[in-house]
Image (cartoon, rainbow, N blue to C red):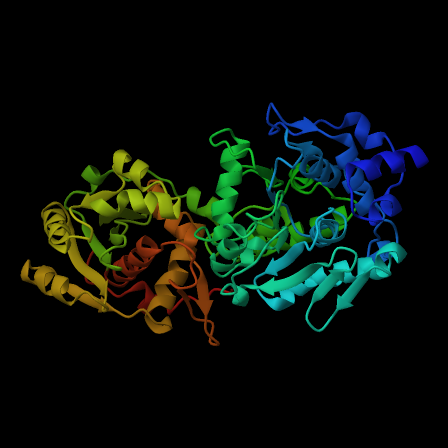
Length: 561
C-alpha cells in the first residue's frame, strides 16, 4: 500500500489529496477491462492515472436513498468511462479526450457520476486555480448535481476539511489550489472570460438553445492543457437542439462515419426497430437495471404505457433512451402502418375527391392532400399527398433538420420549385392539372396567408372553402382521422413524408375535450397532417353525392383522450 501511494504521488505533483484518496483496487473489472477502441495509436493507457481517478471517486459516498452513506462503488459501465477518459494519455502526458458525451436512460446514476467527475476535476486533478462549471437549462436543474457534490464533500472527512461550500452562490472551493466548482444556467450564457478546466453539462437535451454550450466549449478552455467537457444526458425530443447535434456526432463516430480523437461517445439505448416491450431491450438500454432501478419499476412503466398509448413516447425516451418526436405521441404509428394499403393514382382517375391545402410559409413545406371518399361500405378513404419545398433550400434543410428531403425528392415523394421560396404559381398550375384528372369538388384551406392563391384557384373554377384552425373546426375531423386509422378504413400507400408528419403531431386539448394539432408544440413539420385533416373533413361532410354528412347522421365523434 505505501509503495503504491508513493508511486502515485510522483505521477501527480502539487495536490495533497492524492495520497489521501488512494486505496487498493479490486481486480474483478480490471481483469476484463479493454481500453476504448477510440484510443489513438500514439496514445497509451496509463493504469496509474486511471486507478487514481477511479479510487478518488470510490472514496466518495452515495448521497441518496438506500445507498446513502455507502462508498461510491463504480458500476462496470461507469468505470469503463472513467478509465478511458482519465487513463488514455497522449505522448505529451495529457489526456487524449477533452469531450465526453454520455447518453443514457434516467435513474442510471447520472447525477452521482457527474458530481463525482466535477469533484475530481476541481479537487483531484492537480490543476492550480481550476475552474469547473456545472451547467444545465436552469439554475434549479444545475443545482441537482451541485447538491449531490456538496453532500459528497460533507460525507468525506478528507475533502470536508479542505473544501468550502458556498450554498448561496452555489460554489464549492478547494482551498489548497484555490480551485472552484460553480453552478451556471442557460441564462448566464452572456458571461464570457471563463478559463475552464472542466464543464459538467447535466441533461443537455433540456438546453433551450446552444448559446451556453458554445460559450463554455468553444475556446474557453484553450489556456488549459487538458480541459474536460463532460456532457451527460437522456435522449430528448427536439431534433434541432444542440443535444441532438451532439448526439448525431456521437453516432457518426461510433459507426465510423466521422473521426475525432478528442471526442469520447457513449450511448446506451434501444434501436428504432427494437420491441420496446421486451425485457431484453430494457436490459440493453439500461446498464444499471436491477441495481439503481428495479426491473419491477420498468415493467410497471411499460404496462402503463401499453394501457395508455399517450405514455409510449415518454417510456421510449426516458426508459429506453430513444429520441422521440415529442413526449406524448398522438398517432399510434403501428396502427398507421397497418393502413399502408395500395393507392394507385391512375385507378382513382375521374373519382370525386376533396383537397386540403396548407401553404405554411414561403420557405417551408407546402402540402396539398387529396382525400377520396369510399364508393361503398367495403371501400376506404384514399389519400394522395403532394409536397413542395424551394429548390435552393434543399441542401440547407437536409443539413439543418437532419431530414432526408433529398432522398424523398429522388424517390418522387417530394417536389421542388425554382428559387429560394415556394413558387405558388407552379403549385397552382399543378393543382389545375390534377383537376383535369380528378373530380376535385372542394379545396379546404387555412385562411392565413392564402388570399392570392385562393383567388387564383377560384379563377380556375375550383370551389375553395376556408377552414378554421381552432378547436371548433379541427376537433371533429381530427378525432375522425384517429377512428378511421384504428378501424383500418384509411389507405395512404405508406407515403414516407406523410408518415413522418403524422408521427410529429402534438395534440392540444381544451377543457371541453376538443382536440387539435398544435404546430408550435409539434417538434417537426405537420403540414401534410393538417392538410389531410382538412380534406378528410370535407370528404366526410360531402361524400360522393350530395347526401347528409356522417356528422349529421350520428353527431360529432367524441373519443376519450
